[in-house]
Image 1 (tube, rainbow over the protein chains, first blue to last red):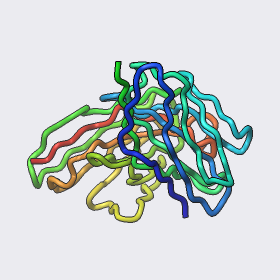
Image 2: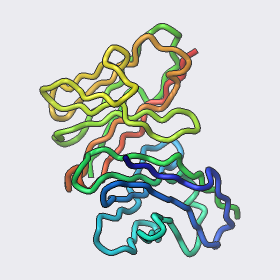
Image 3: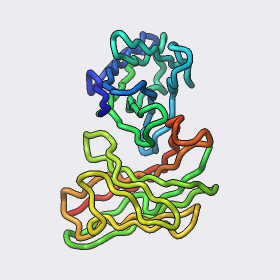
Length: 114
Length: 117
């Protein structure tokens, strides 16, 4: 069975500050991990993904995430927040090669203050 | 990337009625997925729709409540039947990316926001 836990349903940062969105996973098989972003009134868009290659993954819009097996974590970071980063972010997990199902976390709503 | 169009984008429905959501993709895809996003909650997979066969439903979802059609490789519909206020959600259509399902890259439509009174 697989699951993801996102700590913090709401995160607020100042413009220019570090963004850190937390995601921990549980998986009985080597996982594939993903971050998706949902802007207001839009569908989800893939931000980045880990599929067993480099543990530090770079995505779009300056975001990156590091896969840490020992901590079962895949936290999303961005050095400097921009107002346009305000959105909801979802962490998701699937089983590598074993399943076609993505299991999503509950989401974290990021607010960026001027 | 795939371009996915959903109709309607939003609707307000009366209890006991049914509504069909359409999903059109700009390229042929093997599988299409229907998700539900309830208010303040995450996405839950309802079913996987393959062309030419019956949809595969996840635990907690049944065909009588959420019948799905998949007449060709670019189109699918999801019907929400006999609606109640608990069905108020955003319903999202998605398809896999070119890398296939194992890459986990799904493309999503903008969703259909249903409010049931």
